Structures are given as C-alpha cells and as structure tokens.
Amino acid sequence: MKYQSQKVAYWYFLAAMALFGVQVLGGLVAGWIYVSPNFLSEILPFNVIRMIHTNALIVWLLLGFFGAAYFLIPEESEREIWSPKLAYIQLIILLVGTLGAVGSYLVGIHGGREFLEQPLWVKFGILVAALIFLLNISMTVLAGKKTAITNVLLMGLWLLSLLWVFAFINPDNLSLDKMYWWFVVHLWVEATWELVMAAILAFLLLKLTGVDREVVEKWLYVIVATALFSGILGTGHHFYWIGLPGYWQWIGSIFSTFEVIPFFLMMSFAFVMVWKGRKNHPNKSALLWSLGSSTVAFFGAGVWGFLHTLHGVNFYSHGTQITAAHGHLAFYGAYVALNLAIFTYAMPMLRERAPYNQVLNMASFWLMTGGMAFMTFVLTFAGTIQTHMQRVLGDYYMTVQDDLAIFYMMRFGAGAAVVVGALLFIYSMLVVHKDEIIAPGPSNPVPGE
Image (cartoon, rainbow, N blue to C red; front, side):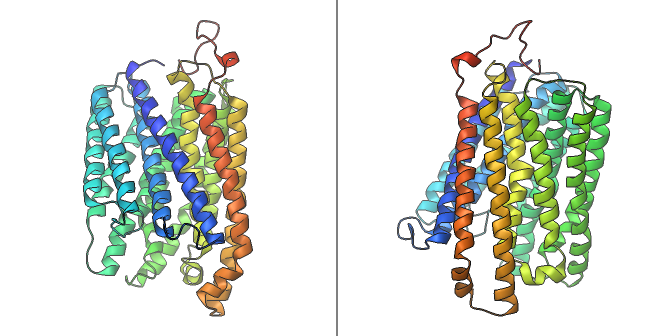
C-alpha cells in the first residue's frame, strides 16, 4: 500500500461487509416467507423485511463504491486523499442514516416508494454524505495526476450523486412519480453505476494483468460511451405501462436492445486483458471475482434483461418472477461481485498481508455464483409459468402463487447456498490464519506495491 490515507477504505469495506451479511440474511428470510407466507407476519411483516433486504443492498454497494474510490484514487492520482477526516465523517453519516432508516422501518415509518423508502431526514443525510464525498474526491483528483480511470469513476460518482436529487421529488400524479422514480433507480444501475463498475474493473485488471494502460483506457472509453448511449434512453423500457406516451414503447425497446453491448464489451475486455496480460499476480481470487463479475453481469443484466425488455414481451411478463430473476442475477454480477473483487484485492494490502484464504475465497465465489445462477433459472421458469397462467389464461393471482410453491422451495435452497457463500467470504476476508501471515519484504512484496 503506497499511501497512508488509503486505510480509510478499510473501514468502508468493513461496514459494507457487515451490511452485506444483513442483506443476504434478510433475503433468505424473505425467500422463506414465499414458502410459508405467515412466517413472522405479526412481528416482522414481509414488506419491512423486503425494505431491509433491498435498502441494505443499495447502501452496502454504495459503501463499497466509496471505499473503492478512496482506495484506488490515491494510487491513480499519485497523492494522498485531500481530507481523510471528511471521509470518516461521511462514513459516520451514512451509518447513522442506515441505522435510522432500519429503525424507522421497524416501527412502520417509511416513504412507501420502493428502494426510496428512507425517511426525509435520512435522504438529506445521504445527500450531505454524497456532497462531502464529491468534494473530497474531486479535490484529490484535481490536485493530482489525471487518468482515464479517475475521470470515468469521478463522472459516474458525480452523476449518481446528482441523480439522488430526484429521490426528493414526489409529485401527486402517479405517472410523474414513477417517471422521476425511474430517473433514480434505472439511471443509477443502468447508466452511472456502469461507469463506476467499468472504472473499478479497469483498475483491477490493470493491477492484476499488467496490461499497458493505453490499452485499458481505450477499452474503458468505448464501454462508457456505449453504456451512456444505451442506458439513458433505455430508461424508456420502464415507461411502457405507467401512463407515459406510446412512443416510449419504441424508444425503450430499441435502446434497451443496445444495453446488452456495454456488458458484452466489459466481459470481452476482462478476458482479453487476462489473455494479453504479462503478470502472474499472486492474488488469483481477486482475478476470479473480476472475471466472474463481468461474465455474470453480461448474462444477468444483458441477456436476462433483454429477455423481457421488448414491449411486446414485457406486456405479458412485467412484474412477474422473470423480473426477479433478472434483478437478482444482474445486481449480483454487475455490482455485488465487483465489490467483492475490490475487497479481495485490497484487504490483504490494507492489513499488510500477502493474499490470504484464497481457497476459501474461491469456494465462496462458486457457492454464491452457483446459488445465484440456480435461483435465476428457478425464478425464470416460475415467471414463465406465472406469465402464462396469470396474464394469458387469466387465473387468480393467489391460485398461481400456490401453484408456484415448488419453485419457491428451490429458490429458498439456492438462497441458502448464497448465504453460506457470503458468510464464507466475510470469514475469508477477516480471519487470517497464522500460517498465512507473511511479512512483506523484498522476497515477499505486498501485491500492488
């Protein structure tokens, strides 16, 4: 580790992993409620568990992004973070807001808008934290060396922070409400977050493969251009049935088709960099997560997104378990696996160790990825049957849910595998065995230095 202020990232990663554990356990409980609908219904209703599951996901991914920025920007800019103290204040604000939001949900106080349920004071706290982050990271980059990675990362993080303003706009008109809601939800995960993903992936591959920076930067700019070109107007695939003009059916269908391209390019980029790489980096598990992230993102966000994005298909399939299948695999591949990749790469350096627990780490990758893939297939089959029974034959919703019980059982089993994998990952990150402690030195340099 070259810069002392990079240690800020360690606390962001710890907080992110704690919330990651909460998120997957919440998901497992929610999965069981699909099997046994009255489970915890009096104590912890399903809507509250679902809020905790989805909000914990968003917050821990953002903590991972912020931590990744604080880790990689000093290396890219070749200078210390402008104000480590501000970075810690930002983390405290985010954690207080998270605890406040969960506490509010448990007593029935929430905004009612999916993913944006946070009470108003929490939303303001998140905005303040985002502004602190933008000031801190922008001042660091402006005072130091500029690279394609810092440029793209900064653009992605500025845009995602600015789009948060739409979380405060809640008009009475339901169509307008949903339109502004998608400005946050879609333009985060299918535009600005893709820039953050591309920048972090580029940094990891640069360090892990040893490929020339010029090659990485050319790929990076192409990926960013296609992500923004397709992602911005691709928002239209959410505007089909919410009361907006009919031309969105064509705009949404056409540009959503192009949304596969940036994810295909990211997957190709990752494998080409490894193929061209001259470096035999010791941290094999970080490379596995990097390749896995780009591959699963292509299938989850790209292929499974395309399966039901055309308006003629979406007319029947929207809001079914097909949506859940796409959502789970896309989030896991594009953002969960990417954060776990940067954790795997950075944590040994932050703790001044050689890469450790790599076998357990790789085992956690295959458990989580296998579990998520099986969950996706199960939900895809369930959603296909649901679409036919409910939207074509016109069967009653609850009758259809009863008929899908076998799929929900299998989904719960897949979720259990994901939880075991997640807990194994956290263990592999935090517990260093005595025989794996290698003092860094000329013969055993800490990777990345």
